[in-house]
Length: 293
Image (cartoon, rainbow, N blue to C red):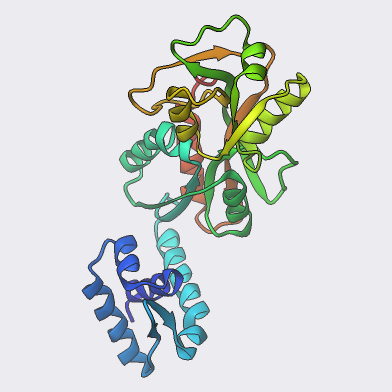
């Protein structure tokens, strides 16, 4: 049985859509359907069935789903063993949105050049969600904001760089005092459910700055775009470029402000430890010396 066909079955079961599974696997829906039919013929049972607009595992499909995942993991582990501890096989990564655009492309370029036998999968997400995924073994490593709590001994952490907080205002706005602008102008808040947003919130509370908040968002690009339109001001981490194109903004440093710490969290017990170490080393190799210039 071809393990790639099992991967198609698992992906269909996960997303509930033949078309979406095909997109994620870079296959055609017809190819995915054919792979499923092949597995079903070999096992002698239907594994999926349509339920309205979705595709769901049958009772037989649910019964074999976990074993299918184990078989795929075992097959990947064999590739790693056969590589004689050289970085190879699938490497499951995660990253925040700003990391995906500003930092990770350089890392992935380095990995692809130096370790062509590593197969990369990248999942975007919030720092909290990706932290949980690494801790549970769902992914191998992630570029995230440093957690606001002690890091478990079951995972490794490497600080990469720090992003100072800045006040962003429309380019034409006159600013005599950053504190006065923050308290007197409609304020767009970085979501306090995000670890980076909690850094901003601590800065405001420690400096006793009462803001005229009217909107709270978890997307830094969107916050910058709204400030550009004159809809308010915001305090955000000065994340690595690129920022959205065409924005006319001013970044005003905040004296004594906290910084958002960015690092790589990795699973130390994964069978893909050689590939993980290669990824961490690549991250360390291109990390900015001291945050965003």
